[in-house]
Image (cartoon, rainbow, N blue to C red; front, side, top):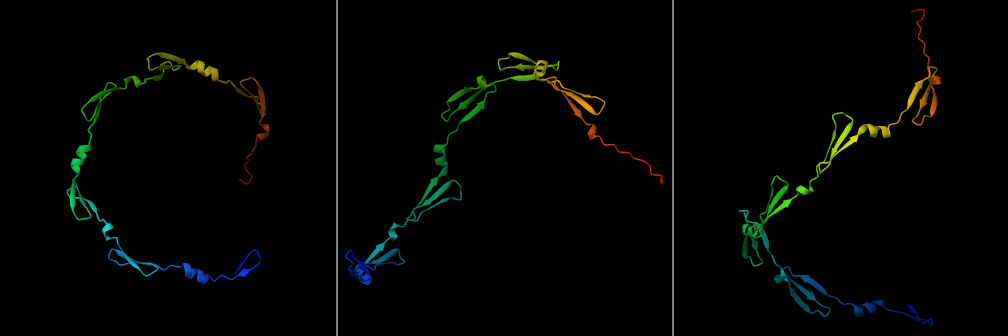
Length: 198
């Protein structure tokens, strides 16, 4: 039922509406590559899709060097893989000449020398025989000595701890500040005695 703005109620038969606009059509697979379509007026149309299907195969021949392509009409075409590879293969080499250079030969037999000797950096760092000096040699052969005693003196801290003989210790830090540590209350006295009955 439909009620309009004036309050008038109108009944609507939905069955009649559906019947007026409903269309019944079917499509059936004939299992032979065709379909039959039946429209709402009972007219039939056959749709043939068998000529749209293509079956092809591509397989490696038992010789391992040939591809066998079979098209949708059953025609076999052989593809020689050795020829394909020869057409696209490039042969190049790179050889270490042992002197900081490499020789690159491209597929047209053109050679290019690549010099990497100026890219190499050689440095060494070794402890001197005196055991107190590091010898650093840079990539230009310049020697720099590093005095380890000076390095250690710059970072060394001197501290002391003294037993006062009375259960305390005196600790003196690198700034000469003293701290007394009392361990007398940490002492444990244990006595063992032989019992009279042996």
